[in-house]
Length: 526
Image (cartoon, rainbow, N blue to C red; front, top):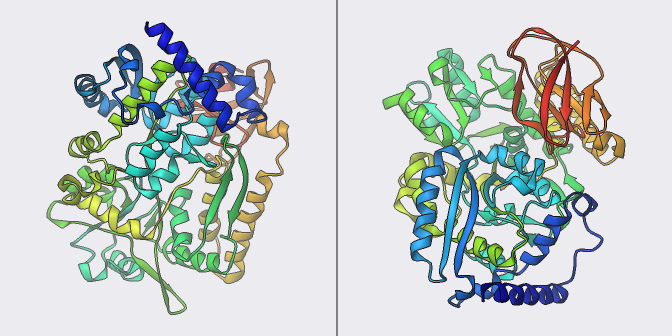
């Protein structure tokens, strides 16, 4: 009977696809590289709509499911799945294997082998486009998309969207940054002024840690002066353009604000918990809350970012706000796919999000959960919410942008701070952005080596040559044990192996080799 119902459901879904339009002429990479998953994705479009408001007994059954969750959340995720099994009225029983895979690694592991990936998986929002392109995400149907839009904060909704379609369920909305400070160095009356904080740190011989040589932090200064940088994607996750005005009069104001800090001897480019090593201010996020609280004790202070002044006008430092998402892998079995969407909605619902806040301090994306006492009583989440008034939701971003933008700070720091020098740094940035869309297919598809090799500091791509799926560096590198590197495609971080940096085990001179089919990186002695 279940098999007959599955066939009927698949036919209904197929008819609904005809009404909604097909995906012919879409992403060639997805069509050529993952036909099986593309077919599964089409089955899932709209596949959750019929469950809205009925008992869903057609989904009754036991499903073998693989779930990827961050290591810290594995046990809680198992508990939440068991709670779903006992509470859902549709007769769904999820027999889940929950494996520890971080949000940062999930996308790389998925696109390396979608068929072996998790049926449900946590991932960072900036990985959405590459997962769509790889056919690793189910496009949400109308009912599922409505669930996302009705229950979550605006920024997290945007994070789950590509073009006009939705591809994931928001899990958190806490991937942002604000300011921790040492109250014995920075008095409360100074926390709103960047200039006053710099003076306090200089007087005490303490550092101001702010990772402005990381584009994620750097961009917030430009947002504070009214600039924007928006990458444009289509419904298949492809980048089609960018609307960016960092190279403008408003951008010059931001550059002047950056120069104020990076030209001071107390500036340190870091977002780690540096209070034990001489910092009085650290701009970072909720993930460092417990460590910093322990380091500072009674001198613990936390607040939104300060303002800076240029030509008598004040500009509040902005930031990116981001989130983590839960993805559903396309399924050949439409019934299993619909059951997975039910589980995904449960795991991203109010109660499960509050549980994660209580256990891990994760900030929820669910609008009701945001009002819970466990959120409103957390000082770090309170500061994050205050900074949210000046934050820009992080959209899909082309993987090359991170390297392009971070050089702005490097160039500003090396300059004399004159308008001419600052304008030159912004023009260099604009030229590099334009070059992304002028890249040849050969360069876009080629792999390179990047890392702490040949005297570089993750700022030079060294060419590789392919022999089938095997790519080998054109030159051998003399490297010490502990040297870290990656192989990446198209001089971008969208596709990069391995998920964690490759670490050289022994001193020597080596060629770097990549198996592009498996993502395995190895060394060959010269």
